[in-house]
Length: 290
Ligand code: AMP
Image 1 (tube, helix red, strand yellow):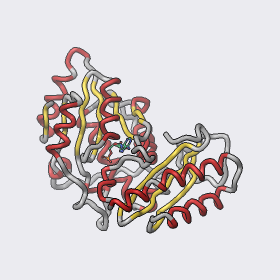
Image 2: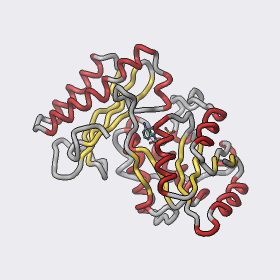
Image 3: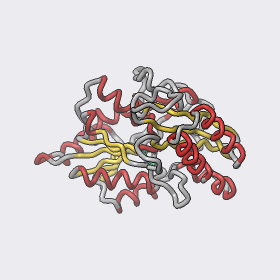
Image 4: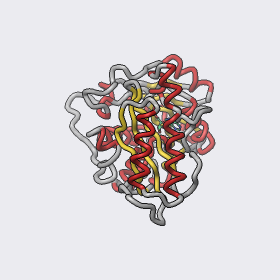
C-alpha cells in the first residue's frame, strides 16, 4: 500500500493503478477505523481491481462547538489495518493540502440536507458534500462505497452526483453498504470509544428501541405517538437528550407523519454521556435491522 499526502503524487499513483483498464474504488473515511469501515473496504475490493481509502478529518463538516479536536486520530493503527486488507492507496492529505489559502467554494444540496442531521448540525452537509466532491475529483474512482449508517449523508452525496452530472464515479456507482453492528445491535462508530462502560451498555437500547418503534409503526400505530414513546424510552434508559427521532422517505428524506407505499426510514440521533450517536433502519422493506 502506498500512503500519499500530496495531491500531485496522488494523480501519478492513480494513473499507474488505472493502467490496462484496471478499475478503482474509493472508500472515504475520517479514520479511527473499525469493522464497519473494513466491511466497506472489502466490498470495494469485491467491486474493483484496486481500492483507495481516504482518511481526512474534514474540519468544514464540524461546527465550532463539536468534537473536531477530540476526534480520534490513529494513523499508524489505521495504516496497518488497511495494509492487511490489501488496499492499494491510502490518501491522507493535510488540511492545508485540501484547503489551501484562498479556498472559497462550498456545495449545498438543498432540501435533502435540511432536516435530521442537517437541522441539528447546521452546515454539516455542506462540508460533507464539498469534501466528497473534492475527493471524487482528486481520486476519480469508478466506484465509491459509503455506509448506510450515515443514511442522510449517502442520500445527499447521491443527489449531488446526479445534480452535478458527476462521471467518476457515476451516480449509480455510489454504493450503500448495510450498517455493521456490535453483537448487542449498537451500530459501530468511531465515536463509540468515547462511551464509558455504563453508557456503552445503555447505548444498545438505541437500536432496541428503534426496533420496537418500527414494529409498532408497521402494524399501524400512530407515527407521532410512536416517535414520542421512542424518545421517552431512550431518555429512560440513560440517554441525556434526543436530537431527533423521525420517519422519512428513504430517498428524499422528506419527513413523514404516516407510512405510505414508498420505502421509509426511521432515523434517530441521541446523546449519551456527551457522545452523539446516530442510527437508522428501514421501515417498510424489512422489520429487521440492516
Ligand atoms: P466515517 O469515518 O465515520 O466518516 O465513516 C466513513 C464511512 O464508513 C462512511 O461511509 C460511513 O457511513 C461508513 N461507516 C461508518 N460506520 C459504519 C458502520 N457501522 N457500518 C457500515 N458503514 C459504516
